[in-house]
Image (cartoon, rainbow, N blue to C red; front, top):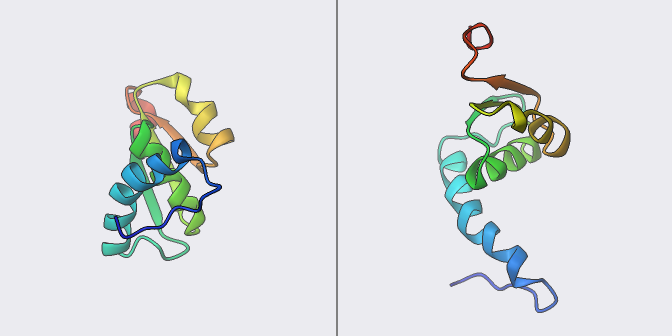
Length: 95
């Protein structure tokens, strides 16, 4: 409630922004993670992780994604624009 969704905006696209989006956005603002130049680590690239990367890049942060799945690397770097990808199951990368 309290947010007006434009009539021509598809509800299926609005729902993730209102749910996962606010779940990620609120703590980022509370912890001042909206200041360009800061570094953000995102653990996992699911629904919340996607939104964290998108907000982080929009705020001008340096974003590193940590994931147990190597198949998420291209998505994190190319599609979402993360600066770095770390395979958390790889001890060398975790160093």
